[in-house]
Length: 242
Image 1 (cartoon, rainbow, N blue to C red):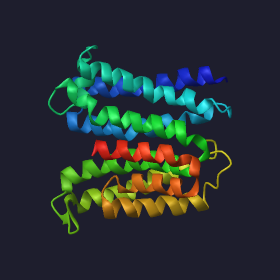
Image 2: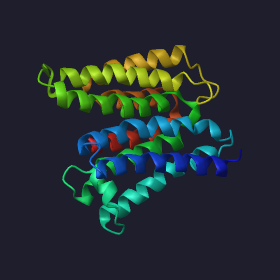
Image 3: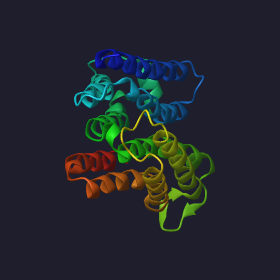
């Protein structure tokens, strides 16, 4: 399969997933808060699952990055009022104001775009960062809202239940993402990945739900000079989301 075909399939998978969640939220099957987090949790892993469809050409990463980028453009159009999409607004905003999409949802897509174009299938750090962002932070919010009465003594803005969910699901999602040899190329997907997944899950638990994601990117910066621009941009985007 050529990269254009892979791009079409990856885009179709992402669009179908978003439209399914939008429709369920619009019909009241899913609560708005839950639909936002289901989108948050599922989008990244589904996207990463399409990476093996792309070739090993140097341009493949940029072709794949067009998927989250195109969705970002759609989000921007809806948030700015150029495009009417009431189902997306219902599924991804707290108050029904389209401009909310210009916050977390848009920046979430930009993080996916930056990490895909920069790290791609050559780095464990990129996959771990996305999996922590999707699985770890997504479940942290769900558990934190429902069972988050007890707060962390060193960070009163974070709950014990949410931080524990960040640790458990961040680690599990990261291990699953790094355990697929078809996703990562020429990388030690066991030893290096296991150490990095556990290390950054702990970091996320201790410093906040996105601390592990930022730490993954800093890890990449220390071990590869070419990763510095992506590390800087990735940390800025993640800091803006929360």
